[in-house]
Image (tube, rainbow over all chains, first blue to last red; front, side):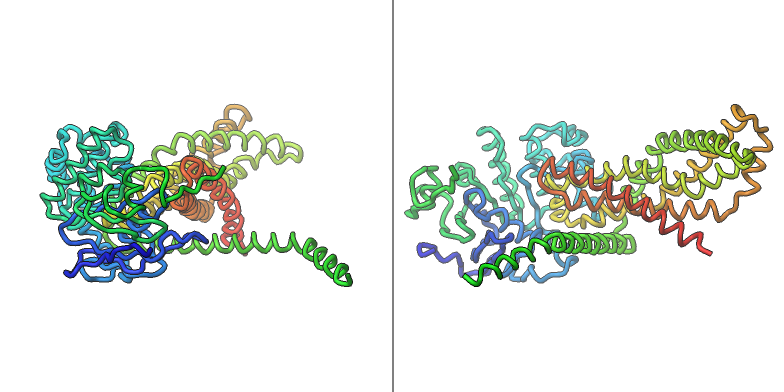
Length: 265
Length: 273
């Protein structure tokens, strides 16, 4: 887009995307995404439904192979890594899924310490204690550890998902729509926990959302993706007053503006 | 104007070839699926040979298949043995061969009905359960979550189940063989007038080790196929609850057909002279 700002910083970014492209059949979902995410900062990627933000996240995580483009983490192109090498990169990554994606067949404490247990980095007895400690960090009692994910409310599932994302103390944490489906107060609670956890770990955070209040609370930087391209990047606090007509329309939730919804009547 | 008859002829040829094109597409689709399933199986088997190994998951799957399928397999085997004895007796009576009932029961059960019926019962229970569980994990992002937690989903979800299915079904078939023969013995001695000792002697006199072993080989193959199709269908599922439903149906139908088809192939291979 002509009004796109350069999404590049001078120092080596934690995550660097260049010319990322992905199509599903005839639909070009990502059409050359360029983005730098600074180490230790919290980046919020905004965009409407179907704009390509989830696909961007899945490409970075290695869940979807891109058709073309560069994905660098700490200066290393991860798109060309073997599966084993990719697993080593993922060791330093935590992820909070939109619906929690907790494992139904495991109790909460095993969900929280899943990565540590799977890699034999901790005994099962020690994992219980570790889970209680991490659950406390997200405001849940140790007794929650013995429950099944199906017994938890939506807000509790998000908090357990957050506990699982931070339990292995990752360098990078991804948040996929962290407040979707929650009431405003619980959304604010989850945002507060995200900010606290990211600061405590000194991690780099990447969140995708279309909740403006949440974006301002958890983001240092923000970028907007539209039709598979980054059309704007700036400070998260400036959302709604960016001078970019598309971003401002999106942030204010206005029906009229340069972004036209494709409604079929 | 002169092009009209040619266009008509071309349309006619296209119409005539439509069924051929459809058949070609179906065959290509089938070959693609077979190739994809073979690669899926090969990858799962390769994970059985490389650490880390998930012993707890193997044990859980083994108990789920072997222990919890026991009642349905046992009941099926007992009633099959009983029906077989009754049918053989009334059928063989037409040419005065009632004495062969015990032999027919034991050979039918060990060579064919034990492994096939146990396989079909387990396909209904376990194939459907695995497809539903893994399919639900797929549509709720749990499989993606495994990847982000540095855990290979094939190694974690598929490999232990495949091994458990391959080892558990032969054990179930040993139970099914025993109970099927006992079902025949029950009807033979209580209803058809055979002496208990004579019935059992006739059973074991004609039974050879190869009869039992061939049934167990079939069972191991069926166990592999059932768990493979359950895992494959679940792994490929998408489209929410409807997709999971389709995966479950597809797992049961595909493994049932494969059991019957492979039964013929294995019989031809194991008993060819």
